[in-house]
Image (tube, rainbow, N blue to C red; front, side, top):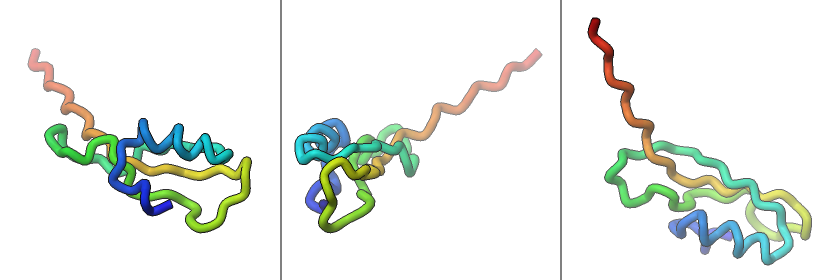
Length: 73
């Protein structure tokens, strides 16, 4: 499964689903808005041989939320 690391989550989810597993994509570690890793898979759990219909968690980088501007009255 480690051969999916670094790929875009939108590509990994259907590929894993085709193998017969249930995919649970999880937006994990946040990175700055200009980081090229946004949406890239960085971890999959569990690894190794996985039975069909098992759930696989796919962790991917997500963009940091934009700061909320302060309202000055």
